[in-house]
Image (cartoon, rainbow, N blue to C red; front, side, top):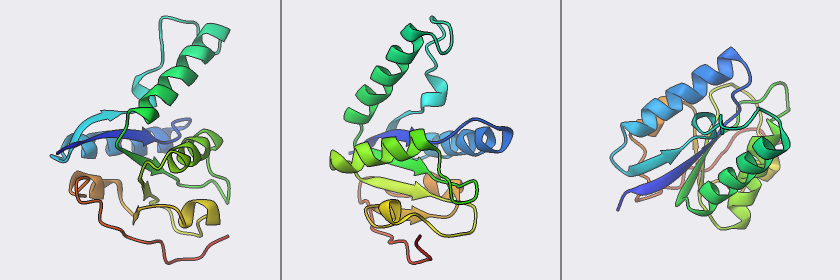
Length: 147
């Protein structure tokens, strides 16, 4: 049975927007992904960005979407050794709620211990999301450098 996917990813600069857009596209091609919630596509434009109403709607909408997801895909391409704090929070919330997390990291380099250990599968290209079987959830451990 196809899964509901929550896509956690930063989208603050051109490189990040390109990466998450490619992830969204790849997931839409995947027959084992019935639906994809990407926060980038749910910006609550009915409210002024960063207003108190926008903040509450964004937070509650994202939490509800994670709670309703079968699987999380987390894009964790670091800037140096710093992961996006929103993506890190979403990742931790999913793990705490026993939602499997598929990590995608296209950039070379180490992974934080708190993400490298609890992940279900580690992918190095967003294009792999088009063919990963979200029904089977094959485990692909991270075996690289941890910090």
